[in-house]
Image (cartoon, rainbow, N blue to C red; front, side, top):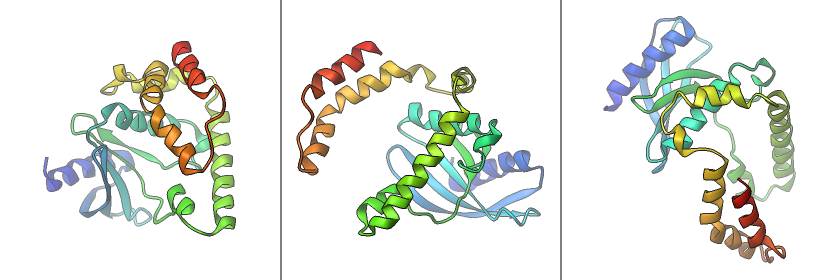
Length: 201
């Protein structure tokens, strides 16, 4: 699917979500990796309050990509967290993409970590912690609702606690590299603890 076809398909999904005739006049690549491609699409619609939307193409990691999709779709059904997460507009599983609200140019956690403004970093971490706490509290005991959405999307057999634990075990050397980069040692019993978590899950 070329970009023109992609935008036509995305416009139909957005039109269905909003109820307004719409066209996407173009797109800008915000981020591209082997895992995904993130586009900012420009909206031509009667809805002047929405001028851009984010389109995320799922590439080489469908298990995580469609889990991201399912997470947004799941949270869209929980009003208490709407102000903390981007709005989900829908997607096309066969074409491997979904649409969500564009929150505009914002700094990522990586930006704050790479910067020199300690106060800004602390404020960002605090704000993120508050949002995560709200989301965690509002979604407590609702795992079944998420699972119902995720099971209807591709690559659902490749996710779960055991798969996540296995991924952590396979990348344990990278975790140790983080300790080295910070100039400290891993705590005593760190590797056996990882194995215990893996075996438990």
